[in-house]
Image 1 (spheres, rainbow, N blue to C red):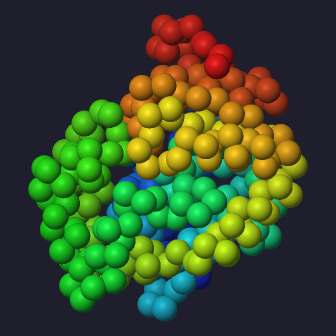
Image 2 (cartoon, helix red, strand yellow; image 1 turned 180 degrees about the horizontal axis):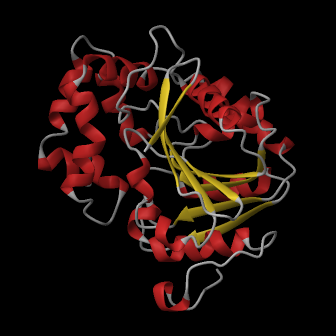
Length: 293
């Protein structure tokens, strides 16, 4: 794990250092790079960079007063790309859809391609099933209570709560790493709350989404057919809005496609990336024959 210090504060990240083109993989709330642990070994020689953004699973708190709402988080991601001097980036998002706001905020100069993997879009910030938890963080002591509830197996795995994100039972050790920072640190809870209450009004969200029509570079939308969080029609809406948008549907998966269908997602990503770069993808013995959908 490496760390870069931005104006907003320190950001931890993983850099595989591969010789191929750069892929930046972002994560959900409150998660970190472990969201991609199953996919990462299948991405061949691409250089994969995985920042842990201040969505609640980060180890080091941000500077007081920093904007950690949806727009602020997107600006932090842009500052991260600047700090590492990354160019021609393929930006991949899953669950949290905020990275797409780099287009509306005029910070997409380093982005060559975008991949939307079952993520928030349009006015679905946050998804309806997540809104009670987000509302809880507005109450005094509510963020602390939310993180205590996430110690319980029912709240972690019930299909009515966090378990709705995945068909696969996420290992307890992974969940512990996602939830422990905010459970143990008041400053991290402060950051988590700032994000949780930081969604702009619906009008602003829709205006930012409409700006995706200005992104003329290749864009891939990978949507889960059985997603309880992200509306099924949003995948096609994104594909229609993006000038070079293309929709691929993945079956037998929840929002966390990297968790439920890692081999298929790796194949889809490598097929998309190989359009412009001749870089080895996952081997046939690791992932089986590639399938196009």
